[in-house]
Length: 342
Image 1 (cartoon, rainbow, N blue to C red):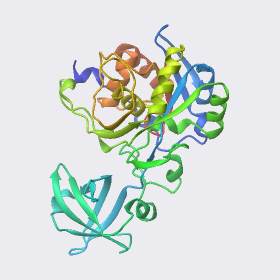
Image 2 (cartoon, one colour):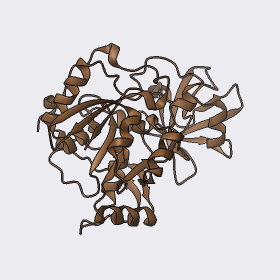
Image 3 (tube, rainbow, N blue to C red):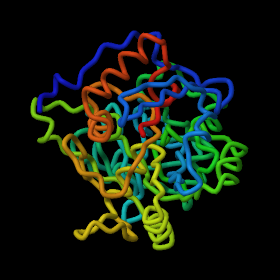
Image 4 (tube, one colour):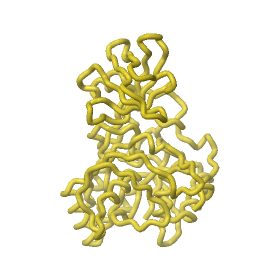
């Protein structure tokens, strides 16, 4: 494997800076592996691509308002934190900048003085253990924090992002990025899919900042993913197994669902209940144990997500589809259009 084989050029104007006016009116590129064919659809046309025997699997994580802007108590210097997840101590793991000025014991003020925190220690690479002088940090984030939009969205977050950068089924706070393939669904569309007989099932993976980290090693197999917490309930695993044995497909909505489900496949190839931190890096060639089809957005070059999608679609087939998407001016990345691989 060569990293350069997973690079591609993308015009800046195709990087979506805002979501489409209506969630389910995004475009959908359908890639059929059995026929090597591509169709251009609207996202709500996904109903016609699902069978009553299928299971559609969603990630119910919710994006935290995890970006905090404040200042250092002693100097007044500006600081920014991106909270990643709570630690067993009750403190938080966070990314901070300017990292070189954040030392153990540094006192920080956020929210016009209403929240105080201090740096407990640093872990290197801009990561810190942060202690907050407030009980319910998640609740306070909703008051004073901002939605952490991806770095390629070159604008400040807006009030509308609090809604549009969440899936309509997001219930479990803990992510720093949205499972963006799910942003295209509306409650009505999900109701129509379920009325067709499709099982709609939910798993959990709290998306971390590593999702945006490019693969930098020449041999991608040496890349290491940052672990992310995920869960599969026993009832969900059993229903997925039942559907598959009855001839249905497991259709994953997003790469986070793929990573969660594949983490639940045991040595015998059976999908089981699972909870814990997943750090599996999926790249070609890979034999999928729990996923038959995938709904996903278009991904960054040289990213771990692009490798995962290539493992399912095939590299040449995927890059042909990407070239066609560029020619047809699909909108790319988190707020962009979608593709479905069957």
